[in-house]
Image 1 (tube, rainbow, N blue to C red):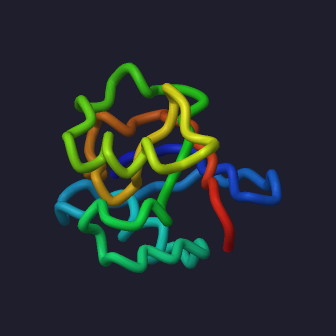
Image 2 (cartoon, rainbow, N blue to C red):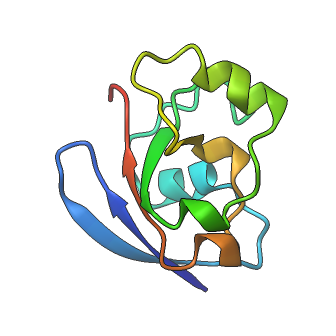
Length: 105
């Protein structure tokens, strides 16, 4: 299990214990915990509706791939802490991370 903290759009925080043995993306995990993530492209890095901003732990994450960089470049509010949840796996790189869900519900 991997423990991380999610800050929802309304500012509420919840610490989650997520399974790290199922090869799930962070987007899939957030949806499983019933967060309102649109994920209209199904996790293909084509819509940016799973945009999150990291408050802690971004330095442990893998580098962004080209598709993620291109999608983040289309967002007016993206910055150096921005990632697409569909491009991150739930594994030790997310341990103790803190991030906020961005975008519209």
